[in-house]
Length: 163
Length: 188
Image (tube, rainbow over all chains, first blue to last red; front, side, top):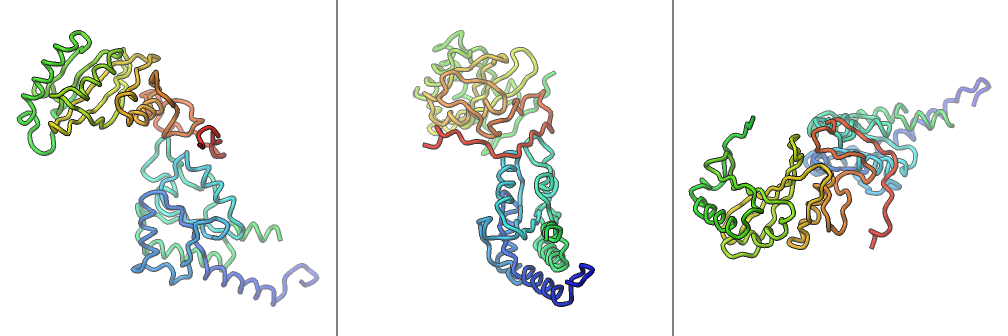
């Protein structure tokens, strides 16, 4: 580090290299609750392959994954469970809100549906659609990779403040 | 004002297929139980797809056991238990939909319940009524006396209010940030 606090050339290159590694090896946690879960399965399968972009290894445990894909309606009974799962993930963690119901409650503006998961957890990328087309999901994944490369996700900004 | 429309049915016209059977069943039910059957609404006269039989609340287990086992009726399958909030006195109507595999006919039994009254449970007649009655309790607040385990089934255990009543707001959210504590007695 230089005298005025700015980081030198090598550490920024190292940072970029680490972010490159992170973005190309996102391990998703498919939190699929309803119909969007099937669309997520379709995106992970052979025709629209998500493993081309590195998100091949799905781990159903929050301790072992770093991308939380919330696909489907989150009821008010399920919302605290989602919060617990998100809290158990370790930094850096990214959240993709898949579909209309996870982003804003969708067509279900009723007493039992959480109106958007961003009331509970910070979301990095939203995918609109009911259910979203797989091309839209892959577009969102690529935009998330751009955000990770630039260090603009919620988790990376928190880490930058702390460190 | 009654705005009910005639109801369409699957697999053909039910009044042709089951009209005679339903009439005979209504006659023998009236003979067997008399005043405990309050009202019978039959399809061509009333706009419905199956006969609706209003039963007095306290004689419900007797009538249900009769409907389940008596030959000529044999409504052995309880399709669903639900309720409606009528907003007139008495407030709720608990609806039981029955189906008979032997005769392939359906029938609907209703009881009128006031707001804080209890309905006798049908768990002794059909085991499957357990969860269906829990759902009616969760959504409407109608308690069933004699039920072994009456607690909420669809909503969170800490929910306040009964969502499907007419005076519950459509968007009455109650957001919890902690998961519901698990009752250790239920973990067996």
